[in-house]
Length: 225
Length: 305
Image 1 (cartoon, each protein chain N blue to C red):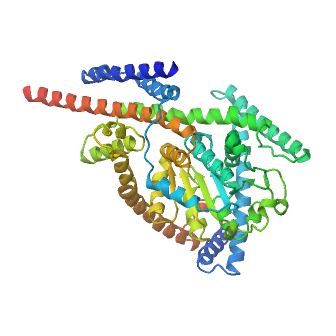
Image 2 (image 1 turned 120 degrees about the vertical axis):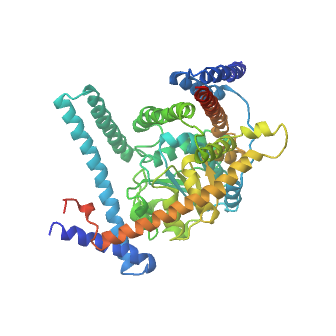
Image 3 (image 1 turned 45 degrees about the horizontal axis):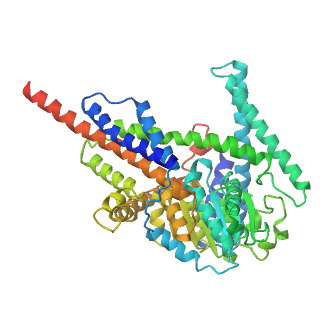
């Protein structure tokens, strides 16, 4: 039963979504809406599960005094602090006139979001530019024909998507040659390649979905054989 | 003054790259920390400059603009903010420009997010738009001219459920005011009551999901603003006409500002991106020139032996 019930739920849900695309009327339309709501509810629980899991892993690290354990206190303080600030702003907002949200500009939560979360995540992401710069110097080499073609197209798109190469070509002509060329690369070779990838992915998803719906593929319910 | 200093330093940096080329050809590549310095200065210094780069309007942006100017005042626009702070440098300026346009032309904004950070980014975009005194003169009452429905978990299934009824997924707005009590949402049941959808997306869930469900299933009109990385995946939908127009990356944002006549941050950021790209391209050239020269030297040495 532990295996049959999840397989049955998966099959019914998969079939309902597949059929309701072609027959959106009831009972399929209604069933699709209900399953759609279930997805939202399950995902909302998954967020809390993630939070609780983070707490568990972090607390374990502190108790075991694993490497870098003092930083785990930062994680817990940030997590609990942000949640408390959000709840505080949420509750005070309900009784404010006019009613406000915890995320409105000027709230404590907004301050945390702007000056902690936003600054920290942006900083982490901006590191990428430095590594791209270093890689461009050490690794992007025209070693063969394919690598050379990739390098040239990348070069043209990089220079054409910003008004860099056009500034140089403006010395000779008024026409924005390089931005037109970059657009052509994006609209034709890139779109064609992306479309091929999309069709390939779609076919792959269809075949694996069919295996799941028919109960052939069972790895998603775990538990070995 | 700062403008001149920044220009002089950038010029000196450009010239010093010749020395980097010389060292690399000699087989003594510079340390990665030096490369980081070049990238850092290449991106930061242009922010101090007052140069306005020439910018042709691409057809992708023009198509979006041509569509949004056809929206009559009072049109209901669903604005999906599906991005977080790391993607904000590219997407936030286009969102601010769009919000400014919407307020100025009395388009009613219904904001939502499939990313938890999206509605917060939307609040920031609205606050940034209202900092412009020219925009603040137009009506911008929350609940009447715009509403923030917040985040809902469920990714593309949220869009699917919204196809039957928005209220199913968003029974209240971010202020916890019931859907039916919000003036702007009177007579808004599902996508059939929406004139246009604008998605600012940085990944999954994002523009792809809006196309696959919002457009294909519920026949909505969709415009998209994406990060440069994400935009490459969206081009097939643009050429097939499934999205009316596309703002791709920083250049898309700057073009959008230009076509709307707004002087926003994307134009300044584009200059930083331009010098950043120039630095990376210079390092690609240096690396490859050295690779070719050293390769030839090795071949010659092997031939002599």
